[in-house]
Length: 285
Image 1 (cartoon, helix red, strand yellow):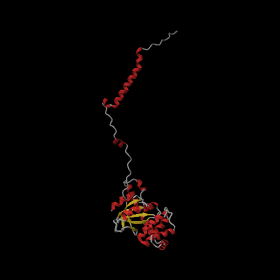
Image 2: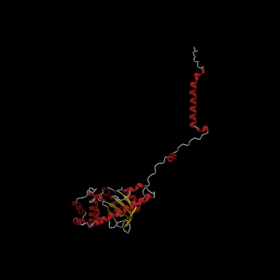
Image 3: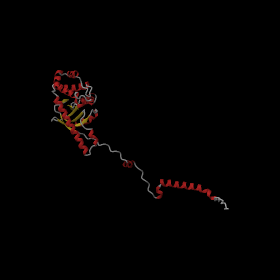
């Protein structure tokens, strides 16, 4: 019969092993924390704090798009209607469509009246008007442009610009047009013979004049687009500008008046507030 093994009793000192291990672990953790916060104890170099400049260098902000420089076009005034002092030192060209709602806003409640009182009526600039009836506003836009030119043939530039205002006040825009009776009554309201105006329109007397304006502005449109394409190719502006430059309505050109009848005009796009026109006009006064 085998002898039964009796387990040996533990040494009395083994009761202190667990607390001692916990104490040693705590000391090691404390030493590690001290060394981490003060690496110079072990002769190590402290890490450099990350400055704002360092953070920016590591995570640069996206670059701002390159702004579009001023664009210019040679604009031949031709036989355009002129408002204001014909000897004014600065010329503004307005390219517009009588059915365009933005043109209407400019002419009636936007910067148009302010430009007139601030610059045209004071003799500082003259305004030349060029027709640009948009195809999707036809036939109303072209008919109104031809009618305005027929009014001018009867009553001169003063009657033309009065009729310009009447057209914008009367038409609902976006190609809705104005019925004939009302259209020719507007001619009477500005002091010209409505029968003569109607005959002029019916005969197509001003068709060629309006078509020439349209062709002229289409050529300028292509010129502006070419300028931007060249700037993009040279990396001087962002490619997104390719879709943002061209002739819409209204469009304006401002430049020094010239005896040749052609101005080198700085392009202004859209029915901008008066502050934007001020910036450009003041450069040429």
